[in-house]
Length: 340
Image (cartoon, rainbow, N blue to C red; front, side):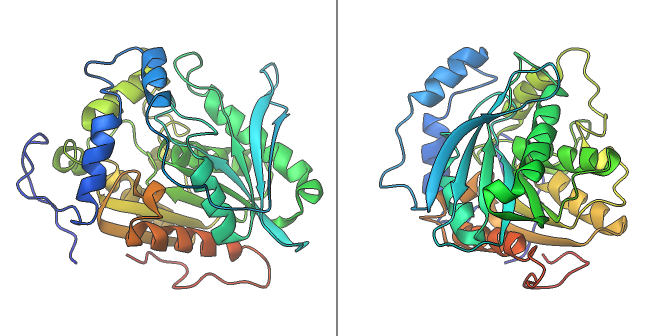
């Protein structure tokens, strides 16, 4: 399948580039997701509607254990709730993955991403620490970034308790969580620790200041919309926020010296172009990058790994990227470049 970039109004795409297997799921998600930025403008109402949506069918993926606890937040901030997923088995050397959930910095939490974290735990063999960072607009940028960094500090300091290995500490996230993961990696570099073995960024938001073409080609009809993203950005940054700040828009940061990255992108996603641009910018800065691009998929498709073959493959690739951080493991595929 080739990656095309048709032109046209976002409310009238010239052709449906979505994989036919994915179209029923996009339509279902669009029907049940709150009309944020349209009929729904209040974040509290949006959260209520999202919480009332039907739960996914079936039992969640099985892992070794799940533990809820709180860990210290940034100085002067409240403690952070986290959920820790441990794999089955008794291996003593595992990667540790600090995971930041998506939801536009405004929505979602530990429960909405429970199945995804369980799957990531199973696919990677890592301990996954899912972080319930503070949401906007109750707190705005950069508070969630500092929460993400505080969780990294805690994980590094408690790596033995978690059953991990310090040399295999990973930060990961999807969508807004991918943005926070990239920003936390920047802080870890600039604040001289903790050392990260990899960043795993799943359809990340990387440029709040840009006007990328994928917002026009994918801005409607593929679940995540341009209107959603405007609403998210407005609540996260606030009226006086700097959209070009490198911690808000990592594409505008100095990227040299960051840990290796694995970037997942979807061709029918408004965030597609900025995700791919970030992967290319990392590579240009000398950072090892693998990119897993899915031309016929949409924003959020990994949540459907039980139904979509592409999502299952993407999760397997992300899991392998994390597993490869152990000293005696290597990632499948090419290193040091972008594999589309």
